[in-house]
Amino acid sequence: MRNPWVIGWLSSLIVVVIVNTAFIVTAYKTNPGLVMENYYEQGRNYERTVLQLIDARDSLEWDVSMEVGSVLVSEPATLIVTVLNRKGEAVTGLSGQLQLYRASNQSHDQVVPLSEVESGLYQARYTLVLQGIWDLILTISSDKGDYVVEQRINVIAEDKSG
Image (cartoon, rainbow, N blue to C red; front, top):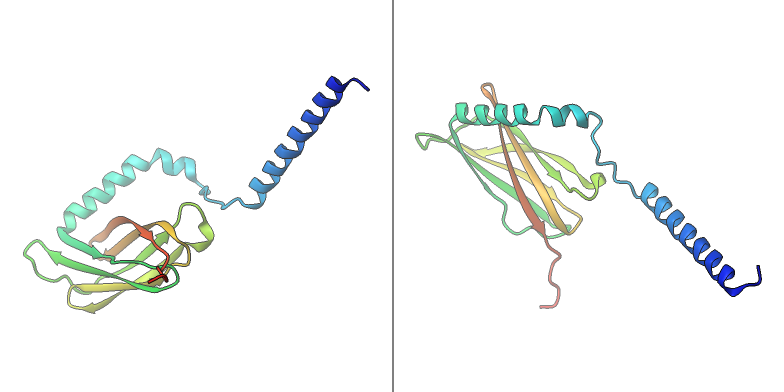
């Protein structure tokens, strides 16, 4: 046990065990919980779900546009949504929601209602507190079905230098 090679190998082994233990504890404590309860069934039915969404979107024959604008950390933002039919006429009386999803941390996800501002013009107001990439999932509902639109945005920190 007094051999420096044995002491070196044992010291290295102890360091590796301590570092691995630290990684395991950190991973357990910071788990964002992003795995869905029924992920297997959702994965099996993914193609069918996508095809159903495409069929619903095609049957509604809407032209939906989203204006996100610049989104700053901890500043109120507004998503403006315009819904027109194939003839270019405003579609009214719809309801919906905007889901704000951040892949790295489930605790900051939000669901915000969509409200009609005027004929064919809808909005959702929200505030995001983390900088980085967010996914916006807009679901517009009518009695004929749901229309789902997704968009990825980058939330930036406000530039206070100038």
